Every structure is written in structure tokens, then in C-alpha cells.
Length: 101
Ligand SMILES: [Zn+2]
Image 1: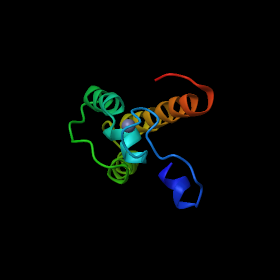
Image 2 (image 1 turned 90 degrees about the vertical axis):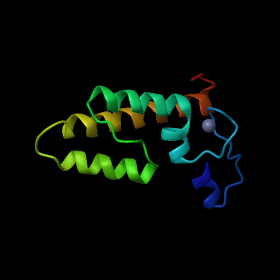
Image 3 (image 1 turned 180 degrees about the vertical axis):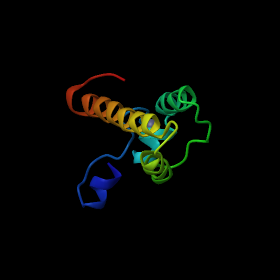
Image 4 (image 1 turned 135 degrees about the vertical axis):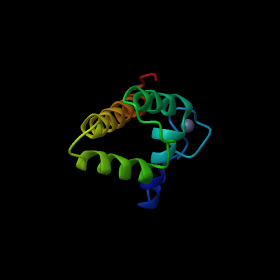
């Protein structure tokens, strides 16, 4: 929603999940407690114990992981894509089809 507002669209910018904070990529994907827990649990499962950062920082991690030729890089970058896709799908279900998180 913050991106749509920057394009000049008059849309409410409250987070679809909590309705309390501005809906940014970082908040939706990594600050909101449920999505933060989901990503944190996936990282722990894959043996990665770095703190969760902003959208830009997490994308940088995913790019780094995708370029690794050994270790868990392939798993971690795939997990990142899966988690972002699942959260994005749920957000769109809630916003456009009345689904629940
Ligand atoms: Zn929220």
C-alpha cells in the first residue's frame, strides 16, 4: 500500500494483518509477529541463526544464498521465495477475497 500511495493512488495504508501499522514490505513480511515467526522458524529449521532484518537486508541474504555453490544456500533461497509467496498470497486473499490469516 505504501508503494501504491507513492504512485499517487488514494488507498488506505494500514496493514492488512494487524491494521495498526503502515503496510510496508518489511512490516508485512518480517515485522508482523506471525510472519516474523514463520520466517524465523524456517531459518532455524535450515540452520541459519542470523537476526531478521529489513526487506532489503533479507533480499540481500537470499541473493547471497542463491549464489552459494555448497551448503544450505539453495534451500535457504528457496525457503525465502516460498515464504514471501505464501505471505503475499494470504495478503491478497484477505484484501481482495475476504480470506483470513
Ligand atoms: Zn501489521
